[in-house]
Length: 149
Image (tube, rainbow, N blue to C red; front, side, top):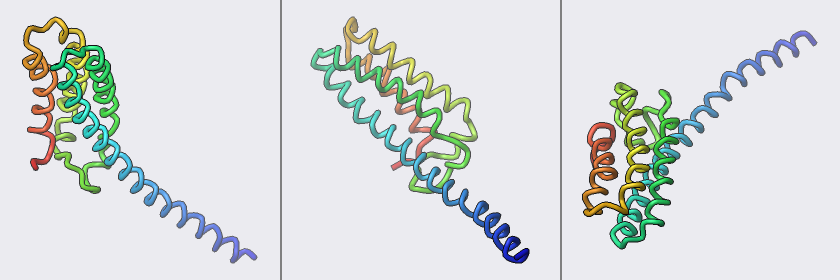
């Protein structure tokens, strides 16, 4: 009987050591896929913003800009240390090496989207405003923190 209890305890210990690794790997995959999906969503939303703003539909464009702003802040949670590799991530190590700079860029992108939403209607040059407040941030991030295509 004592032998069976020892075996059960050993089994429980081994199981508890193995189980977190598989859960952790799944979590890492979900995080990486989640951040890729958010960046992809922001890109497609940015294209829609450009279309709406160019047509003068600033209400729809502003709504999308606010959504993008929230997404940038959400992305701050999608770069824990254990997600540097795997699952076809396109994130460069420079994100973790320059974490403050990356986080500040995400915050700036968020703030810039709100500023763009406020400024776009009164802008004489919608294209220049989009370039300054939206596309320049994308380029800044991609040039330093994303693998080239």
